Image 1: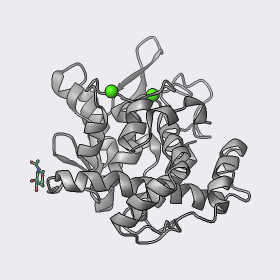
Image 2: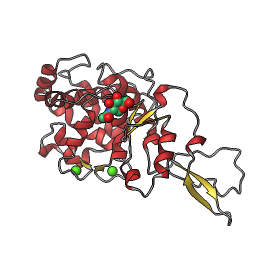
Image 3: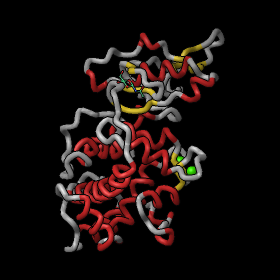
Image 4: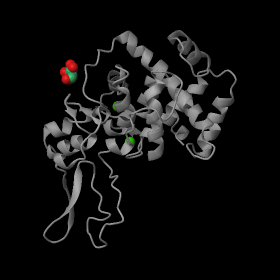
Amino acid sequence: MKVWIFFVLLVAGHAMAAPEPEVGTNPVQVEVGDFDEAIDVEEETVEDIVDNPCLNYHCKKGKVCEVDEGNTPMCVCQDPSTCPPADAEFEHVCGTDNKTYDSSCHFFATKCALEGTKKGHKLHLDYIGPCKYIETCLDSELNEFPLRMRDWLKNVLVTLYERDEDNNLLTEKQKLRVKKIYENEKRLQAGDHSLDLLAHDFEKNYNMYIFPVHWQFGQLDQHPVDGYLTHTELAPLRAPLIPMEHCTTRFFEECDSDSDKYIALEEWASCFGLKEQDVDKDLII
Ligand SMILES: *[C@@H]1O[C@H](CO)[C@@H](O)[C@H](O)[C@H]1NC(C)=O
Ligand SMILES: [Ca+2]
Ligand SMILES: [Ca+2]
C-alpha cells in the first residue's frame, strides 16, 4: 500500500500539470508515512541490542521512544534539533500556520510539542515545499479542478495497468476493472486536452470515470478504513498538489459539504461529479 501511494505521488507531480503521467522525475519523493500522524513507520535496525525495550516499540511521527527509570519504553516528543537536516528545498514543508518547516520531521516534532493545546490541534502539514503565496481560487477555476483531476485519475490507473506486469501495482480485481477502461476504444487518450473536451468526454464516457474516483478514495481511506477521509488521510494526495494547483485546498474544503471535517465517500463521489446511484462502496477493492 505504502509503495503505491508513493508511486501515485511520483505521478502526481506531472499529472495535473502535464497530463502524460511519467514516473521517477518528480523531486517530491515523500512517502505516505510522512503524513501519517496515526501510525508509525520506524524501521528496526540490525544493530539494535536484543533487549532494548524500545526495539519494536512504535511511536507515531514526531515522537521517539525512550525508556524510563523502570526500563519501560515510552514515546516522547522528538526534539526538532535531532531531525536530520534537510539538504534541499523540496524537503521543506509548509504547515497550516503558513510557516515553513525544514522537513516533515521538524514539522511533526514541533506539532508534538504543542500536543494538548488548541494550536497543536489545529496545526497540520499543509503542503510540500516552502510556504508560498497561493492565488485565490476563483469559482470558474474551481469547476475546472474535478475535470482535470478525474482525467488524471483515469490516466494514473491506465499507466499503473500498463506497467503492472510484475510489479503488482494493482490487485487482480482492480486490474479487471481497469482492463475494461484500458481496452475501451472510446477512451480519451492522455494528452493536453481542453476543458471543453474533458467536459464532453465526462458526459460521453461517464462510466469510465466511476472506478477511478472510487479507487483513489480507497487508496486514501486507510487509517482507519471507515469510509471517511480525515485531513491526515487526504494529505498524500493533497500536499504535493497544493503548490501546483491553487484550487486544491478550496476543492477539498468544499468537498466536505456537511463541514464535519471528514470527507465521506458520498461527498467525495459527488464533488467529482458522480451520480448518487453510482456511489458504491463495493467498488473499493
Ligand atoms: C504565507 O507565506 C508566504 C511566504 O512567506 C507568503 O507569501 C504568503 O502570502 C502567506 N500566505 C498567507 C495566507 O498569509
Ligand atoms: Ca478513514
Ligand atoms: Ca463530511
